[in-house]
Image 1 (cartoon, rainbow, N blue to C red):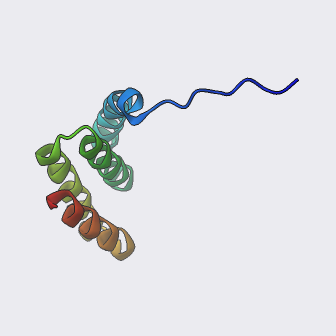
Image 2 (cartoon, rainbow, N blue to C red):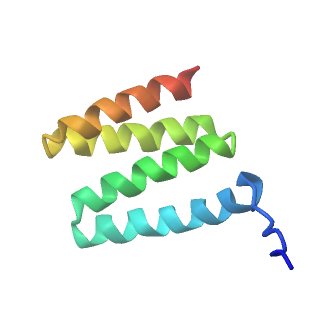
Length: 90
């Protein structure tokens, strides 16, 4: 007997949960002074908001990630965030 197929959850199902998770994660990192964690959470939140069609909020989050990356001299993440921000404007 074969395995039953596992239904894949769509972005429509998962994105709202991700939005809550990354919002809380960004807040906690900001409160604790974890700049790298805040940058990652902001970037992930921006991507999630883009999936949800909340483009203006997504741009704010991606810009926050970019600002923190610049502050930390994180050139790899700066390049990634610039690319994502350009994509959000399209």
